[in-house]
Amino acid sequence: MQFTSLTAVVAVAAVLLGGVAHASAAGGCKGSAPLVAVGVDLPEPAIDNTLPQREIQALSPTYHGSRTVGLYWTRIEAQFGTRIRMIGPAIERAAACLSITTVDVHLTMSTRKIYVSKELEPGACTYAAVLTHERKHQMTDDQVLREHAPRIRQAIERAVIDAGPREALPAEREAARAGLTKVVQAAFKKAFDALLSERTALQEQVDAGLEYARVTASCSDWSTLPR
Image 1 (cartoon, helix red, strand yellow):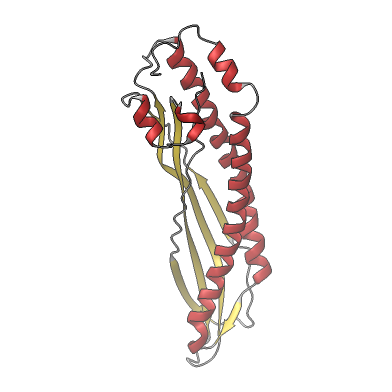
Image 2: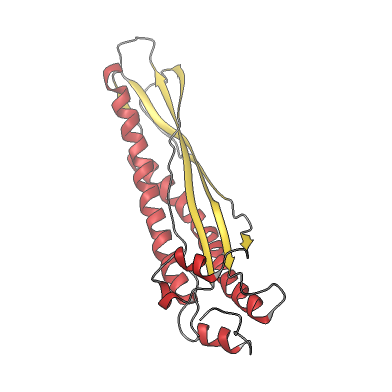
C-alpha cells in the first residue's frame, strides 16, 4: 500500500512600509549599519481528520498513484518593512541624504494543516503512523525557517551596507527611496529563494528511501483504507 504526504505549498506576500524622518544636514551623506530583525512564527498545525481519502486526494489528484491518506499543507508568508531616514539641509532645493535605518522581516505560516484520512480513526495504529510521518514534514519546516532566519538577516544587512546611502535632490528623492527599497527586496528574494531550495530538498528526503515501507510495516491492519 502506498501513501504519502504533500510537500508544502508556498506563497510569499511582501509588504513594504516606508517611513521617513527629517533632520538638519550634518555634512556629507553617510549611513550606518541598519538594524535588521527577522522574526519567525511557527504555529502548531491544525489536525484535520474529517475528510475521506478521496477528498484528501483531490487536494493533490495525481500524487503517488491516488493513495494519499495523509497531507502536510502549509503556506509560508513573508512580510517586511523598510524605514528610510532622510537628512536634509536647511536649503530646500539642496540634496538630502537618504539611508535605510531599519528592516523588519516576519516569516509566518497563515495556513498550516495536517490531514489524516477519515478512514483512519484516532487511537488506531494506522492513524498514529500517518500522523507521525506528517509531523516529520512539520519539523523539517520548523528547522529550515529557524536556520535561515539569521541568514536572511545577514544577507539584508550586507546588501544595505554595500549599497550605502543615496544623495538626492528633491526631484530625485522618490526614485532614491525606490532604489533603496529594491536593495532590500533583492536581498530578501535571494535569501528566501535559498530557503525554499533547501526546504524542497529536505522535504523530499522525508519522503525518500524506505520511509513509506517503514510506515506501512509499522501497522498490521490497513484494511480501513478504501481500495
